[in-house]
Length: 233
Ligand SMILES: C[S@@+](CC[C@H](N)C(=O)[O-])C[C@H]1O[C@@H](n2cnc3c(N)ncnc32)[C@H](O)[C@@H]1O
Image: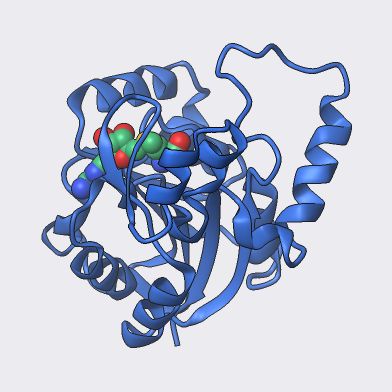
């Protein structure tokens, strides 16, 4: 997923240009830190105080040059208009967040407004079109049957959350002025792996398979997660 994001950034901006990046729902800040280390000016917005503290601690261990390039704000992704001016970012990430947002459209519209013209909106969402895959591959037939006509699911943490359909998000992105430019499947083969499975010996080959499937029809359509890239017109 990081590679796909970098590919989109490289295809859009000259190498070495310092981009203004907003990471909404940054969690512990893994992506945000990675992009700050790559030389970009990164703002992380996160509503959970524990996550904010973890991100601040991780940042404090970085060299001064990187610390100066990153700021962390505690707040809700639906309130970007309170914190920032419209058009003030080149890249807006919203990864693994829409699952927790009951009404994604206003949040997405707000994120699109934060983008400068030509800016990139990167979304990582649970794929509602493939919700039956996980229970189905586990032999839970009742669970699989119940997963076809819904966007609701229970995640591994036991939380009742929601997934998004590619067709719905495609229409939403067009409607908010950031039409879909590219999309990828993420975790096509590995979604059913147990959390305590160690790192496999052939990790590199596994990643190559995932990477290939995530870009290839029909595999990408049944991925557990979708990575969508919209571009502000
Ligand atoms: C699954 S984590 C993903 C973290 C990170 N983006 C990543 O990809 O690793 C989801 C994060 O989104 C945050 N979050 C959920 N809803 C949010 C909202 N409305 N505004 C800001 N952060 C939110 C949660 O607190 C959590 O840290």
